[in-house]
Image 1 (cartoon, rainbow, N blue to C red):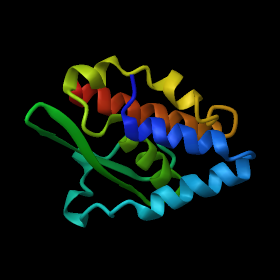
Image 2 (cartoon, rainbow, N blue to C red):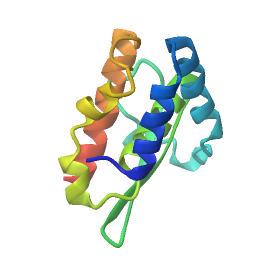
Image 3 (cartoon, one colour):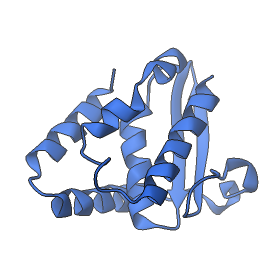
Length: 133
């Protein structure tokens, strides 16, 4: 269960032949993402378990989940953008139902992220799931 936005993203990743192109695309996604206001870069919104500094600010309105996020690392900003494509606009029940590892595997990230980045990505997914719980 993924958003249409994530389906479009998965199609783009399928079109990109090699990991270098996908990596560049992840960075471009991060650059295109609006920065999180410094007022929200507080310990309560910081995600533990990430090698980089990561903040996720959840937003729930009319039963729909969304979030803002930021990181001090460009590739991680891109991963936050990917998670936004995956979860943004879903109901809280739908957020909890997303099989994030399976959906993210469609992008081919599993084989190309360092263990620290993979751990950080899992920590971000867990934070999102906790917020929706």
